Image: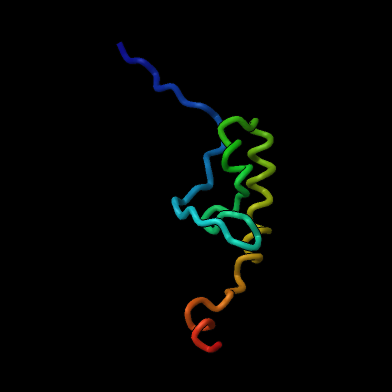
Length: 76
């Protein structure tokens, strides 16, 4: 007897396992979600997840400007 695999019709997490929070924008540099969105993801409705997913591409440009890193500190 074959048992069908249980599946859910839900949006999957955008997490790419690069979990670093940008110090100014306060969003994850890997998936672009806020800390609140990440912590609430499993409790969000499919509609709420869809809304977040639709907004993520608009957040990516906020992280393109680098602060300089080590090279900028050495110039001081």
